[in-house]
Amino acid sequence: MSLPILLVTGFLGAGKTTLINRILAETDGRRIAAVVNDFGSINIDEALIAERTDTVIGLANGCICCSLQGDLLRTLKLLVSRPQPLDNIVIEASGVADPHGIVEALADPELWAHARLSGVVAVADAQDLTDDPARFDDPLWAAQIACADFVTLVKTAGLDAARLRSRLAAATGAALIETDDELLPLEVLLDSDLDSRAKGPRTAVDAASRFVTLEWQGEKPGSLQDFQRMIEEFAPTLVRAKGLLNFAEMPGTTLLFQMVGRRATLMPCGTALPGNRLVLIGERHMLDPEPVRRRLARVFAPEASNPGQ
Image (cartoon, rainbow, N blue to C red; front, side, top):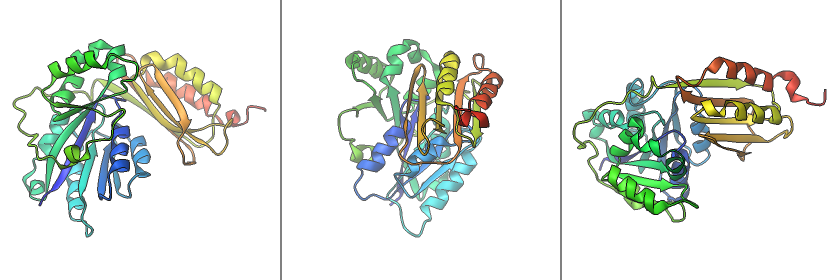
């Protein structure tokens, strides 16, 4: 029997990593490998998923819907040939990926003999759709939703979920799953036998040229107040940001920074990690990386690690 592969797609910051971590946390005894793709060379999501499974592989510095298809196929062929068999593979696509390209790659005849694409789940962010109704007309978002066999609507608290469900139903023929307050239907997500290749003709979406990514790493803890002021200043130019950061005000505590649109959170990640890793993504016509890079160098400058000096 071929190994089922679940592909998780969704727009930048929709909640793909959170969904995968929930799958890994709620599954009972399954051996699941996660393949994670970030749009850039710093793979934050790989670190966030690694705590949930002993088999997580990060594919960075590109997008598996296009430039990394060969790496993806080689990785999957290694996973299906493991001495200790897996029960499932979950692939997290980058938020800038058109998943149709990944679906086509997974139709590779050599791979299909050992593993099959069991389904595609798209994560839809209710807060983002409410804050920016034009998202429904975004060609990348539409391509991700159109490719899905299942759509999970998340972050619905306090919102008109019924209206969003109606609009999503009009945008896709996929089954809608709400997961905020319920256990995941794992048998549906992981054990389906859907032929997601049969989606009909499509128009490819070139998302990679639409976005620009700033990747930054540093060793010294920074100033939390300066970082917060910097993010507030540059927030209008950002679509997505995420990072694992250390600050002088909180020694020994690594913080997970997440930002989607203008919504930002900064909380302990649970594991102290050395150094700092940060990825910022914006529309190419909006985000100029160099001023942000210079500002980060000041926020995390060696002298910033001791605000009392």
